[in-house]
Amino acid sequence: MEKSLQEMKREIREKLKLDFAHPDDIPDEEMFMEQVTTFMEKELKNNLRNEDEKTLTKAMINNYTKNKIMPPPVKKRYSREHLIFLIYIYYMKNVMSISDIQKLMEPLMSEAMTEEKLFELYTKTFEMEKAQYFNIEQSVVKAKEITEKKLPESEDERLSKMLYIFMLGYDVYSKKRLIEKLIDELD
Image 1 (cartoon, rainbow, N blue to C red):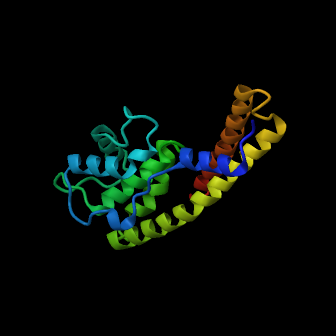
Image 2: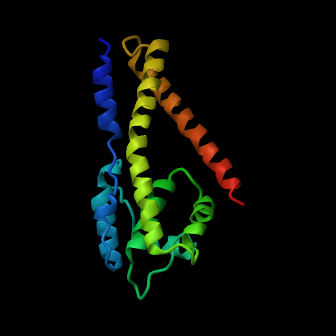
Image 3: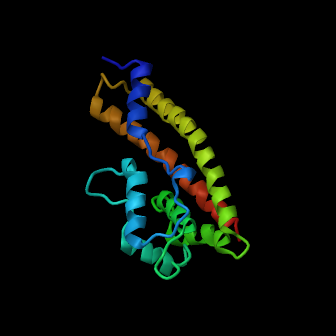
């Protein structure tokens, strides 16, 4: 039996559920590495695929600093600025190469970028993410509707799900290519 549109939306919403680090939840105090990883884990844990996965490890943070994707800690202490960098990197690392992330983060590491400006930028990003979440939800629902028209789940559940995954994969791939072209224009 086919699902109603409301059931489909509810199911998609449940699977799409993401955690966002609210700007007010980002502490404006210095932290040590262990506190940083604990903060990221707490704020973004619902984004993980399974319990064995980590949002961020010490090695990752050290690599981001080594690759100049974020500023190094000051006397082994990380600021609100570092947390913002890590949140940006967290979302980008699955769709962008390290060199693309580095290129994207470069202006954020300039001397002209103060911590206040960076926090303001993050606040704007957060507001846009919240609004975009509903656009994404609608896009995913539309992909599911198209899939159902081409191959109803009742006809062959596995093939229908595969077709839906291909549709979503194409969407992600297309957006990834657009991101790459936009990064290339940053030169």
